[in-house]
Picture 1 (cartoon, rainbow, N blue to C red):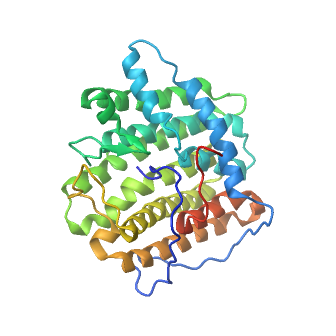
Picture 2: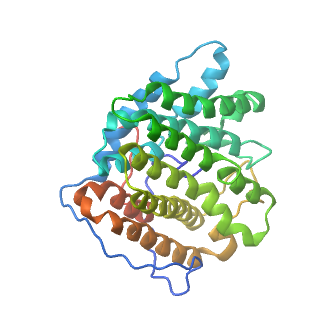
Picture 3: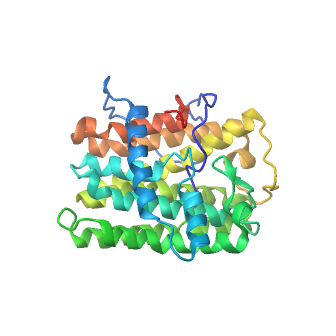
Length: 331
C-alpha cells in the first residue's frame, strides 16, 4: 500500500524541524554511517533488474491463463520501484545474509504488495482507475478478475518462500518466522485494519490509517530481511521501528508533493482517504515528515556496529524525504 507510484522526477520537499509534531516521539538521531562511495540509485537500480527477472520467472502463465495475465500485469508493471523487496535484501545484507537466499522472500513481498494494491484500487475500496502509470487491474481486466488475481498472489507469495528458499542457507525455523511476519502485516490487525479504518473511521483515525496502510509494508520488509539473516530480537526491533517510520514517511511526502503540485486524481473522489495533508494541511504534514525522518534514522542507531552495511537503509530515509533522484525505464 506504500511505495505504490512509479519513479518520476519530483520537486524536493524541504521539511522544517517540528515544533509541535503530531506524532509525539523522540527525534534524536546520532548515528550517521557516511560513505562517500555509496550510491543509492546505483544500488537500487541493480537490485531492481535482478528482482524483475526473478518475478518474471516466478509467475509463468499457466491455466487458467487470464488469471495469470492479470497477476503478471500488476506485479511486473514497468517502472515499479520494488521498494519492499529492495528493503528486504538491504536489511538481510546488514547482518551478512546472502542476497540470493533473500530473493524468494523479496519476490513474495512484491507479490503481496501488488495484491494489496489491486484490492485497494477496487471501486468498493479506494476506487482508483490507475496504478503505477497504467490502468488499475480492475480497469484492465474487470473487477471479478482483479479480485481473483489479488486472491491468487497472496498465497503464491507464501508458497514461493517455502519452495524456493535454499534451506542450506536459511534454516526452516527462520522461514516460519518470515511467513508469520508477512501474514501479520497483511492481516486483520495490519494492512486490512488500516483499509477498514480508511473506509469507516472518523477524522481522528489518520494516525492509525497511515501506520497500518503504509507503515506495515515497510516494517514487514525490513524485518523479514533481518529474520532471514538471523538478526537478534533487539536488532529486529530496530528494523521494525525503522520500517514503520520510513513507510509512513514515504506516503506523507507523496501526499505533500501531490498537494503542492495541485494534481487532480481523476476517477475517485477520495472521500474516505485519510492523510496528514487532508487532516491538518501541508505545513503540519511537513512537520510530521521531519519527525518521521528523524525516527527512522534514530532506529538505525542500534545497528551502528555494522557500519557502512547500514548505508542502503539509511540513505533510503533521505530519499523518502527529499526525492533527490529519479529512476525511469531508460536506466
